[in-house]
Image (cartoon, rainbow over all chains, first blue to last red; front, side, top):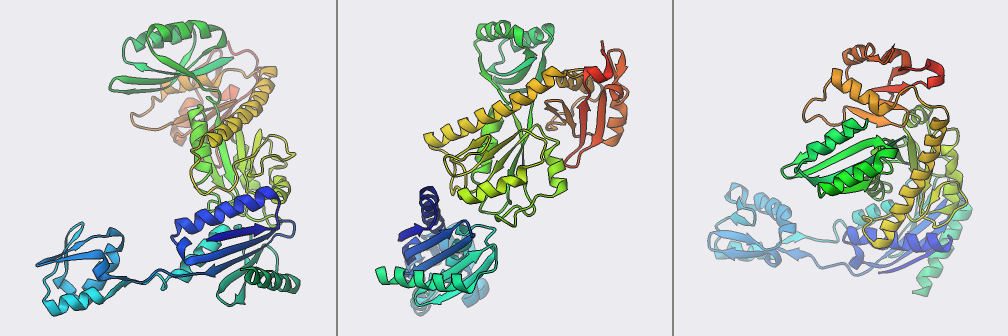
Length: 184
Length: 297
């Protein structure tokens, strides 16, 4: 994930680059982002944040996170336990019972096992935009609550300010994003 | 003037230290005995420091200076949102507590932004109940330079903290604006130390002002008197908090009525103090100056 910050003084640019890195890392979306561009204009209080989505991780299948045993399922990755349980309850109802922290009691025949293994527990693409927008909201100053989304291909771009966003700034943002996209 | 230090040691003869403190006219402000470990915050006249240090050494204990003990502080941020809390205000708060201060945190109702940032009259009045405050701002120089107007007209020792390393502002500490994780590196601890030192400076200025017009009695002495009438409940945390020129009392209205009648020397407590409900918590007791009340003893 490349991060480029410009417009402010040296300290502001460096500190916001670090903020971008850390926030997207904490949200677990770093690997899905190609590049981040942030333009800061502190005097007029205008911020332009643009994120290009890169390669998104593949969907996580049930077979990736469980080990099937004769009368039970062993969970190998606890992070997906809630989603797995919701899936099992939806499909098998009361037959699926969580008998331990990493165990689910469920008896399945061969056909059912094959069908279960092929199911998708979690697709990172489903909530990627939500997580990205959450990250962008955390990066942008809290006082910059007037937001204008700028449509751009393969990017999510927001203009943010505490004041109304003028047409001049919208045009400037378009030029900046065009030049950043051309540079890549 | 009283000096406040922390004693850290074992249970071996620690009562002798307490008796010595009482003999020289000092106070035990806080005491915590956990199995074989004892922690005490001690206040004693400055000139008796050598005696106390020698006693602590004799008992095989350790002592630590608490430059901010006897003060109640407020850490102010533009809001309590993710941008400002938890980092760095919790680290600031913890560090100042280790220096002896009692700390509180306030997120302004409408403190975000640059032009739109505001502070209400009630927020200013609440801040003025404390001994000092630290305003924690962000990383943009232009924003901080405009937002310091929030601190104008607050009659309180202040420290301004922000991200940019250097700004031409009175009592400014850089290196602690918007952070995304805990302050745990050496350079960050140095920054916290600089902030504590700056706070100690502004508080000492206020202490000197009080020395020039001394209080009728010491807040430490009043705390002892009040606790003799209304003993602290075991397990209750900080019912009485010491401030530079008074106390914050987390007591009921009936208790307050009772303590007004406590004799202090030749006068009553109500004669030498102003007691009023706090806008923040409990009741505030502000000690009048000796020039106003006359000699108490």
